Length: 172
Image (cartoon, rainbow, N blue to C red; front, top):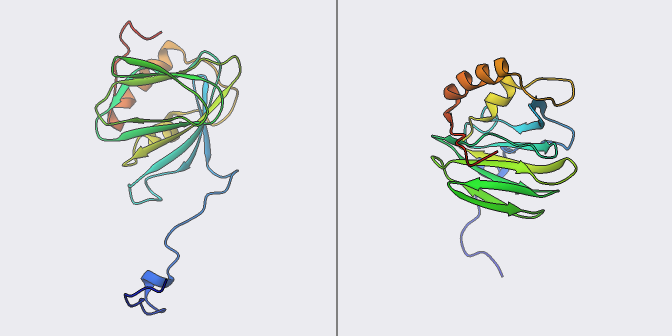
């Protein structure tokens, strides 16, 4: 089947400019946050604020504190293991191949239910929250729990990244 509309001139930047980019498997900036290790693969700086992408490894029994993003949607794709997710007041289990979408302003969290470290992918749109990991995650060492002092410091910093912690007593 032939196209009936005219093709752009082959010298037109729409046709010829390589405006996208590739991030290779071992590229990105790795940061440790508590019992989680995240490779920040794509930042808002690279996508003109449109999107951020991270790959995460979460230790057994651990995850994040329930929170909201006031300006960003967040999505997850489970690669390995089994995760419990909190979406508002709804709890559900996610397995490899499951995709989870959380719109901005929705309380959410996740926790690794498996007996071994589990992997998931994390997407933010627009970008922004990945900067928290870059600025406040540890650059080296094994994942370890945050001290109360570190947790308090992170709580103060989170607000600058459009996040609010909402732990409640229904998530342990």
